[in-house]
Length: 341
Image 1 (cartoon, rainbow, N blue to C red):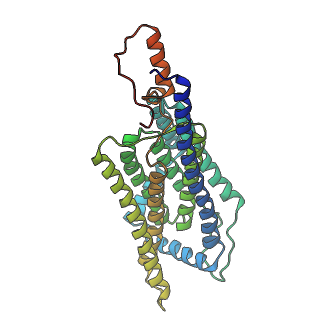
Image 2: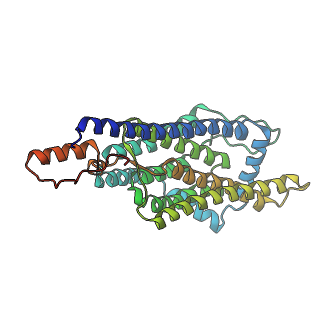
């Protein structure tokens, strides 16, 4: 018996909308957590005396290594982020999306970069850093959040979003190494406090969640899976590795900070407190990577039309009906399995 296209399309549409709704809810949940986290980090680090005391110590510790080779390398890393380099990154994102015929995805991914940078600039301009300590290490600029970390993390997220699903793990590794290096470099160079980099991380991943939510609302997401068990195991190990890095880096930073502030004499503890600041920056960068992997788990974004015409889809049904009208013979019993069958 030949089934009519309408019921098949209805069943397929219900399945896709259900999957899209699930992804939409996931993106909103994670994105809402990022907004709350951003507010908490800002209030604790900027508007409390303990937060200011810790980050003042990190800035002083970074100044102690001024002129060293490690700070020179950090400055070289930061100097590579310029307006031309950001434009080049945007062009790469659009080019990759054009190659895979995902123009809408490319535009949305570039939007993540633009929105993240503009939000960072707005927060820096319209918020303040009060002086809560009688004696503190103060600067005239408002450094929360870090613009350099925002650029690096947003480029990372945009690239990971536009690459095909099977290459996503490789893209995460390559781009996150660079983005994490930028975040740690801002602390090493004494350009930013640890909370500045974490604030940038939360802004970027929040906009990545918004982008995925928009794509899900438009029906431009589909379930995907790596074709081999080995690939799936490697992807799981990658997520586990980033989770481990985030947890261990945070634990080391907390331990180093605790030892320094518990000591009666804190002089000469510059390396330990700088380690704590770098550890927090690294932990935030790794957390972005693992959150992005979790957000996009088993999801392909803005799949080309050729990939959407799967067995049992409305496109496939329409194509088969057209082929039947053209006189193409289908052997008896060669009926397709119903969706989900």
